[in-house]
Length: 234
Image: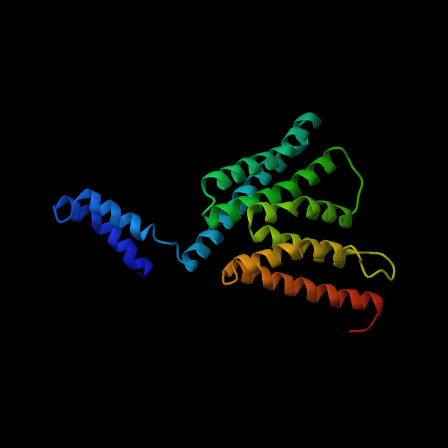
């Protein structure tokens, strides 16, 4: 039965029971037989996009609020606030994992929030204690810390962000005549997740996004790597 018909039937059952057409036991058996109406792919996609946008806007607002008063705060307070985004993001992710695991919007949004929390916490701690480093090292550390997230939550957006970070490591590499070998091990670490998702849910829209991410990252990696090996090739 089409999902819209299941939804209509479940809405009609209370009325049929109240009018004496069917007994409550029969209504319960009908509802159990057809189950809950599945969320349509388009509806789930829009909820996921809205959830991620909402999380992003909330995170940016908090960052702006803290950043405006950052210089007036002591070092200990700044260190505590540096970990606050990550801790709050992990709380949201735990809630989503145990209570909203079937909601793509909750899971993807919470996973993106944790990803942003990792990057923000590392940057804030480095700024607070004046830890020296370069962009490549920062991106590599952030990518490696985010890597377990897709495997644990079966989310796609953190995997795409991870691949974007790997590509950024390659593009930002400043080694002389160096093709940026860091990209390839980073890229290889996400491939088992793509294969796993492709086999477990081959027709899902999220897997299509993941496939596009893999294709784009691999293409950029090959092109930039060849340019580094053979300058002026393009």
